[in-house]
Image (tube, rainbow, N blue to C red; front, side, top):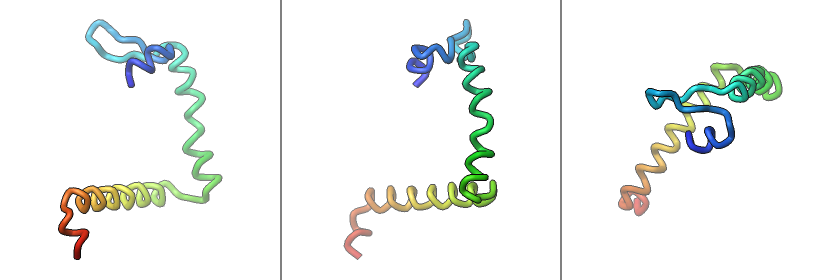
Length: 76
């Protein structure tokens, strides 16, 4: 992912291999700051609703991953 961001001109690698935002990366970051507010206003979700939904999706994902790694659960 870092290679793609670097190729897109959004980051550059520093001397210590850290990723540094370029001017284009800082501009994209600035433009993206309004996204959470727009998301909440357009969906009616609160920050807590979004956090609860994220947690529920993670639990569902974990449960699905566990069931596919343990085929005996599918036969019950």
